[in-house]
Length: 162
Image: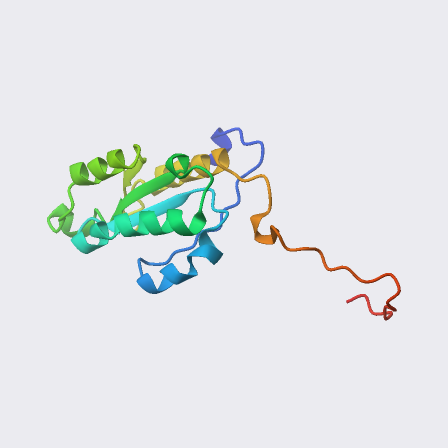
C-alpha cells in the first residue's frame, strides 16, 4: 500500500466509488450517481473483449448523464484489470489497443492492474485521487436548485425539535 504520509495533503481526500460492474441496468441510474462526480474510472477485463468494446458506450453515457461543464477536460482514468489471469496467456486486449483508445479520448491515464494480486492498484488510485481533487466541485450539487423549506411566519410550530 502507498504511504500517503509521503504526500502533503491540505485535506485528505474522501472518495465515494460507485461500482456498476459494467451492467447496463445501471446506466438508467446515471443522473443520480454521476452528476457531480469529480473523476470517472472505467475498468475493463483484459481477458474479455466485450468488456473493452463497451468502454465507448460507458464513456459517452457518463458524459451525457453527468453533463460536466467541459466534457473534453473531464478527468477519466482507464484500468485494464485481471492481468494476473493465466500468466497473461488469456489476454485478448493488448496494452497498445488500450493506450490507443486512451489517446483517442484526449490521453486518458491508463493503468494495467490486478486487484487480486494488488498490482498497480495503489498507483492507479493515487492518480484517481489527484485527478478528482484537481477537478473537485466547489458546490454541493445534490442540493442545487432545491429551495429550502420555509415555514410561514404565522404558522404555529409544535414543541418537537424534529
